Amino acid sequence: MPRTSAYLFLPCTDGFQPQVLTYFKFRFLRRPQLHPRVTISFLEIAQEDIEAMLANDELDLGIAFGPMQLSELDYTPLYKETLGFVTGASHRLGARSASLPLAAFATEPLVLLNRSFATRQHIDAYCAFHGIAAQVAVEVNAIGALVEIVRQGTLGSVLPNPISAVYKDLRAVPLLPPMKLRQVVYSWRKGAYRTAASKAFVDLLNVLIRDLQLGAS
Image 1 (cartoon, one colour):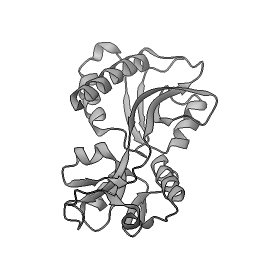
Image 2 (spheres, helix red, strand yellow):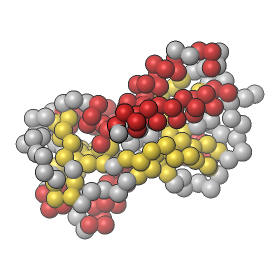
Image 3 (cartoon, one colour):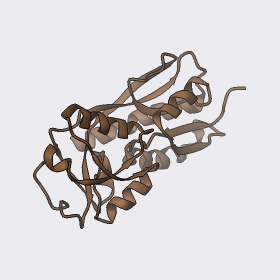
Image 4 (cartoon, helix red, strand yellow):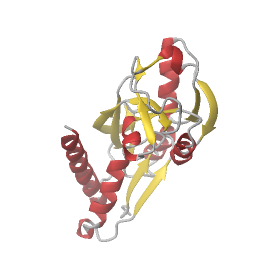
């Protein structure tokens, strides 16, 4: 029997834009006519788990980073984002306006997501490419825990730029050279049945992304 629930699986992992989540919850829930039996479940899981669950037909949709690694999956780009160094307001670099060069970044103690997350893999690839080693003091498995530690002002981190805009007590410091842009996508299993709820979710998600991009321009 086709599923009747709509799911947004958040690999926050990787910081799928918090603004999108907030707007989606309010605007989707105010339109129950889109689907009379819709259930929304927001979860924070690693990219590889999202891909495996999609491939096993356990999900209608997933939000992840493209390109997808499994050939059974298809995806549509949503937007591109970059990551930067982030600190708490009381951190000694919290008031810095200039970019943070590699040599300085390599000496900063960090709290990062563990290696199962796409964001961490992105950071590790950046460090390897430039021949430096990140000074990882703490590893966590949830974006909420990471943000709370950064807020204390002792450790820095590397996060998607939109996160520092949502949490007013965080400060973003650009890296020099910057990290490569990464593509946020929504993905599904090729040939999978697309429920009315999942189609409604995708339609609204595209509208919200467009509105955010227009608002930032």
